[in-house]
Image (cartoon, rainbow, N blue to C red; front, side):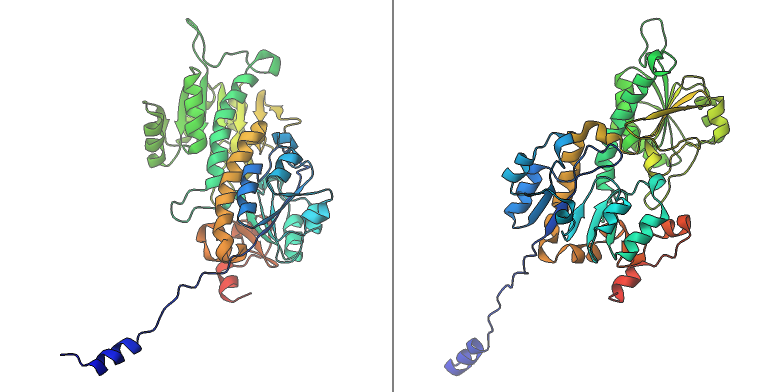
Length: 401
């Protein structure tokens, strides 16, 4: 039987434990106005700004940053943002969010240990941009390489791919018109006249949405990818039997030389997309046929592809119309901006308990997007491509660089 003394001893030795909340980290976020590539998107839309400011974060938006996506400065101020009428104020932020690659002039405004999240558009990147970012000791992340660590999905690439896949078919259909230099073929055909043939290289998200759009317009669709699982998954998602094939060079050549529209729809998780169509095959394609290389932001699938802009989106080579704009979703800027903003906002809210730098170093998927870190180039592919020294990011983090 327990005595009163032992009961007192047992009770008195109990310690009270209190849950200690982790300190809330206020983020200072800057949204510059884009001035290159006829970029119409903005990284954060007003409703996302309202969410972030309600959580105590500070958001500074450069005047006019959202105007091409039809968001006014008033929309941003009502959401709690500060409007800056000079670039220098925006570039004092700890975190910069851009939807176009940084220019050399913009890099000169950046601060040591500042975090930059933006696309890089590989064909437009040059080694001077990297060395300038290193000199400024900027922690730069490429949107194209940010990955969800749990699912392996590249979330920003995915939503932009949905838009780009649908847009690619609509663009291809438009460029087939006689007035645009095309063959004068209606994509879906009519009674008694066969539809156009569409070849899609890749079986990811771009291909899925391109397939759905092309089939909806009545086109004949054929899809090539070396990943059989992706081909099976795409067929399941589209919900109908499709003509699919691995990339057999002979069969692919046969299909491309009779194609009306060819879509480059491949994505690389680390560097350049594979170039699967050499120039000699493009030379054999039908005059007036159309190439829409959605993969141009990572180098392109066709050897003849060269990055273009919304101001001058096409060029003709070997009689084939090429459309190679890296930021296709900018055509529908409001939809694209909202899609990017949703993803970035959920990401930033995770940084509240440790700060953005702690989130980057602790999240494998975000670390995959880092290409410069406190003066070092950390993307091995970029190092090889530009013949620059690269350092493993994990080594830098563990050594408390």
